[in-house]
Length: 371
Image 1: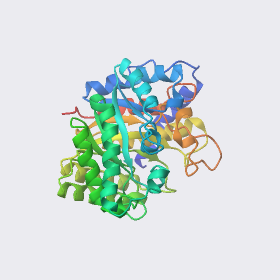
Image 2: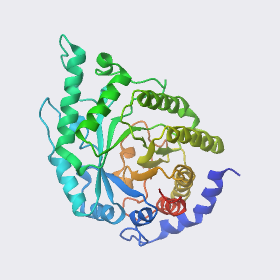
Image 3: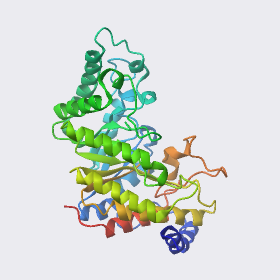
Image 4: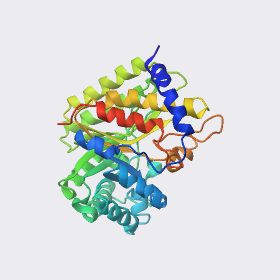
């Protein structure tokens, strides 16, 4: 019996019991941030400006001691037009977070795929000296954003998703065309260090643990190796951890073995790890809620038992805490074929704890103490 199947059977009875429970506000157990803190880890969630309902904020305040903005600190949100910086939404969110005793992560200074750069950047006239103009744009943006938020952001995703998952090669955009791919990423990290001298500087990507992500993992390793050779001030790999039933079939033991090998190579470079955007895609799991929630929890526990076993991993952030606040509900590449809404987060839409929350709590309790 494979590990996922065994986990699912163990959790199925608990999932059925949870589904039958009356609606209650949040879990009545010890908070996830408290469990994590005892092991030397921060625990948090991504918050979108439009998701700031009183109940959801109360849930975050109870469970989290870290916040990251879902979209509000990305380039296209902060500077939708040249020089028109719009910090108000992020400032408001972060002020609330600090009032609750939370720390703040920054996401992201440069989102590398061309389609996620501001439209005006892609259409920009780089003039007679395109390399110099490309550097000027990066210097201006990174400088203004880091200077604005200052030491209030303890960790930055400096560059996000620079590796093409299909080929393992570095992505192309208007900056790489003028500066070179590794050179541009190196420059962005150098600028981040200049303007955020105390921040933890992170390269963030969504390489997964399954066989279909092998080229992506290899490309991320090569990029990190190239940056280290250039003495770029990259300090950590952010592992987005959008895990789940992406492939129609998988070999769980082989996936875990290859994932550990990947993490060994990253930490062997002297880099820290972070889980930056955790959720569980359930599109290949049964429609029945109890069985599906059990499967989600089993997948999570298998993944977390390996990933959290690395003491250099000190940050664990969700990308949505309740099902109605998950990006997967609206992403056209990830729907369930039966049309049912996904259940990828630790809480349902009524803010009832699901088996996934229990799996996360158990994994946090079982992990080694952080250094």
